[in-house]
Image (cartoon, rainbow, N blue to C red):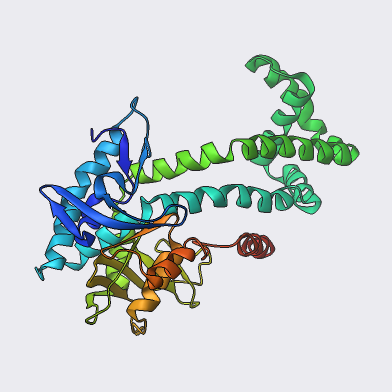
Amino acid sequence: MAGRRHHYLPRFIQRPFAFRQKGKHFYVHAHHRAHGAYGTNVMELGQELDFYGGPEDTSLDDTMTAGEKQLAITVNRLNSDGPVDPEAIASLICALGIRTKSMRTALTSMFPVLLQAGRARLLDGKRLQVELAKSLHDPKKRRQLIYEQIRKDHGHLGREQQAKFYALMLPKWKILVQENEQRMLAEARVWIEMGLDRLQGEATAVANKAFLDALAKGPESPIRAQRMVDEMGFDTWDAPNGESFILGDCGPVAVFTDGKPRLALGAIDNDVEMAKVFLPISPTRCIVGLRPPTANELSVDDLNKISAALSHEFFVSDQADNPSLAILRQTIGSLVPIATEEEMSQLLAEDGRDR
C-alpha cells in the first residue's frame, strides 16, 4: 500500500521536469489555475486523498503502484536514448492517459449528460409502441412484459402465484394490449421516468465506480495499447534550443482526424480516430505517435497550448513563472476534453435514427 495520498499524475513522470533535486526529493514548478505558480515537491503534486479507493480496499492503488516500476523504466530509457519497444511506449501512453483526474472528471461529467440526452429517446412514444407490438409476436418479450404487468398490478408475489397469473394473462395478452395500450404506455413512461430520476441522482457515484472498475481491469489497457502499436508509429521529439515542453496534469494529449485536440482516450464518434498523440517526458523531449500518413506539424508552443488547455487544474514545468507560462496558465481547462453536450446529444439522436 502506498498510503492514502494517491498520485493520479505519477511522480516518475514529474521528476524529469524537476528544477532541483535534494537527495530523493524532486522539486518542480507547478502552474495552477487557482493558486498561481509555485515550487513544490513532486510528493505533494498531482495527488488526492483516496483517489483510487479508501483504506477498506487498497487493491487498486496497490495495482497502480506496482505497475509504475516498469512505466518509470520506459520513461528513463527514453530520456537516456535507450532501446524501447513500441509496446512499452503504447502501454505508457495508455496507462497515463486513463488514470488522471482530468480523465476521471471528463468521463464522470459525461454520464449525467448522456442520461439526460437519452431520456427523450427512452420516453419516445413510437419506441414504446414498438416494444408493445413486439410482445404480440416475440415470446421472450411477451413473457417479460406480462411479468412486469403482474408486478405492477399485484406487487410482490411468490413464484407459484406469478405463474398462475401468467397462465391466465397469456391467452388474453393480445386483447389486453390492444384495449389498454395508452394506459400501458403511460405506466411504462412513469416507470422509465422513476428509473432515470433515480439513476440521475446517483450519476456521480455510478460514473466514479465505472471509472475505478475500468482501471481495475488494467490501466495499461493491453488491447488499446496493441491497437495503438498496430496503427501508429512512435518516435521522440526534441525541443529546439531555448524552448521547452510543459507536462499537463492530463498526461498525454491527442489530435484527432477531425482536427480537434482531445484527451488521449478517443472520440465518441466512431468515424473519428486518433491521428497524433503526444506525451512530454522531460522539458526537452516528448513522445510522438503518428497514424500514417500523418505528419507532426505542431511546434513546441502549439503542443504546450494544447497540454495546458486540456489540463484540469495545473501543468508542470522546470521554469518559474514568466509571461508565456502565465498566459498558458489562464487557458487551463479551456478545451473540451472529450465531447460537448451538444455533440453527445447529436450522436445519440443519429444513433437512434439508424436503429
